[in-house]
Image 1 (cartoon, rainbow, N blue to C red):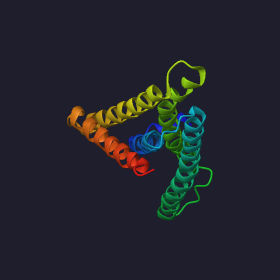
Image 2 (image 1 turned 180 degrees about the horizontal axis):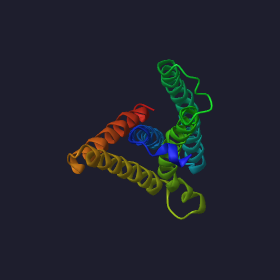
Image 3 (image 1 turned 45 degrees about the vertical axis):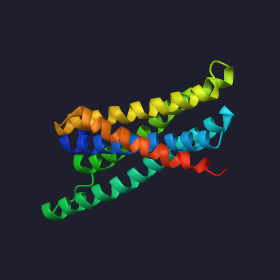
Image 4 (image 1 turned 135 degrees about the vertical axis):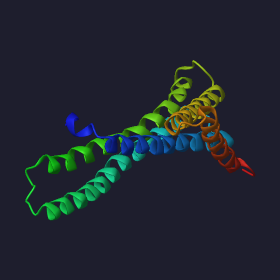
Length: 189
């Protein structure tokens, strides 16, 4: 399977899915964090359940959605290749690549939002054991989320050969906007 993953095309797609879906996982937990903070949710189990439930949903959606979509796109190209070559290619490396690459990309697509959401959720485990207060857990979760966004932005800056700081700050800005909009949920409550 690893042989079929060596192409530049595969890594460009996987990289794109990793960033896009990691971004979704981070913003989802950041939204839950800010909305819960604004409504003064004091039970860490509520945050853990909400964040992990969202992480699981994003992961399952990412794996299944990407697999179905990638498989359809790759089958289309495979069938066009068969038609162009006027040959049956069902037992070929081309056919194996359709499934292998679809599986690999779907794993990246599902793991990325799950892991990013999970990392942003970790601080909520500490109040369960009385190690920190919920207020500190809220700030720590938001800090982790914004840091992860900055790292994803820097990664995009590196890919585009542009400023890592500029791209990082843009991503953090989107996170701050998400938090501010989510904080408004507690207004008037």
